[in-house]
Image (tube, rainbow, N blue to C red):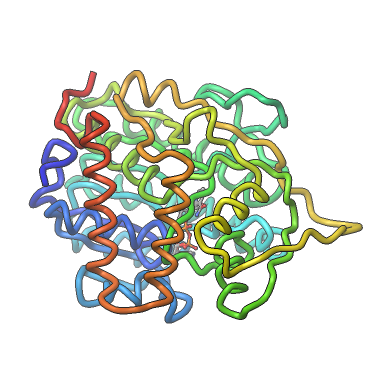
Length: 368
Ligand SMILES: NC(=O)c1ccc[n+]([C@@H]2O[C@H](COP(=O)([O-])OP(=O)(O)OC[C@H]3O[C@@H](n4cnc5c(N)ncnc54)[C@H](O)[C@@H]3O)[C@@H](O)[C@H]2O)c1
C-alpha cells in the first residue's frame, strides 16, 4: 500500500505514548507503512491493552520512560535520531484530572515542554506533531464547531492542560521553530475516539464492553452529552496526513489542525449505545439520576473546514460504519487470536474504504 504518498517508508518515526490506545494503533499503522517505529512511554496498564495483545514489545522498538524525565527523554531521542516524532503521551482522562490535577498538569504541560526540548536538541527530526484534544478550546457550549483560531480554555484540569499544551506548541513554534531548516511543528486536535483495544477506566465504550463481559447493564453518567465520535483510525489518518504534508510541502502546514467527524455526525452517548445494541444485543444500559457530578462539557463540536480544504483530508466512515468497526474491534479483543494481524486487517479495510471514497492520502492525489 502506498498511502500518504509513501512518505513513511524507511523513515524512523518516534511516538511518545505508544503503549496507549491511540499510540499503539499508530505504531501498528506506521509499521504497516514501512516505517521503523520507536516508542517512549510508561509501561502498559493491563494485559488487555492493545500494546500487549498485539505483542508490540516484539514488533517495534519499545522503550519505557516518563515524559516528566527531561534528561531521559532527550537521551532517548538523541540515541534514536528519528526523522519524525508524534507526541501522544498524556494523562488523557477528565475524571482522573479532578482526582490528580497536579499529576495531570505535570504530565500534560511539562511533558509537552520536554517533548519540544528533546525535538529542539535532536536535529534529525524534521517534523513534530503534538496530539492534543478538542477540549483545548474555551468551550462556550454553543452549537457551532470550534475553529483553529478560536481561543484556548478549559474548565476542568484535563481540558485546561490541553489548552496549555496547545499554547506551549505555539510558543515553541514561534520562538524556536520558525526559521528555515528548523523542525516543522504542528498540533492535531480531535475528539473522543473509539475502537477495539481501548480498556481505559471512565471512558464510555471500555466501560460498556466491560459491562457486556460481566453480563451487566452499564450506568451512563451523561446520556445526553454529544461527542464527535470517531473511530480511532480517523484522527490517526489526520495526524499521518498532516506530518506527510509537512514533510513533502513544508512550512505552510505548521500550526493547529482539527480532525473531527462531519458536522452531521455528532451523536449523544445514548444514541451511540443504542446503535451498538442494534449490532450486538448482548449489553444494556441504565441512566441514574446523580445529584452532584463534576463538570463535563455537554456540547462540543469541531469545525474541520481547514483540514478538508487545505490538507484534502476528510473522515472516511459514516457513524454506522464507525460503530461497526468498533464493535468488530472489541469482539476481536474478546475472542483473542492474532491481534496484530486483526488490527492490520482493519487498517487495510479502512484504507480501502478511503480509496473507494477518493480520499487524497489513500489515492495519492496531491495535497493542495
Ligand atoms: N482517546 C480519546 O478519546 C482522546 C480524545 C482526544 C484526545 N486524546 C489524546 O490523545 C493522546 C493519546 O490518548 P489515548 O487515548 O491513547 O490515551 P492512553 O491513556 O490510552 O495512552 C496514554 C499514553 O501516554 C503514556 N503516558 C501517560 N503518562 C505518561 C508519562 N508521565 N510519561 C510517559 N508516558 C506517559 C501512557 O503510558 C500511554 O502510552 C492523549 O494526548 C490524549 O489526551 C485522546
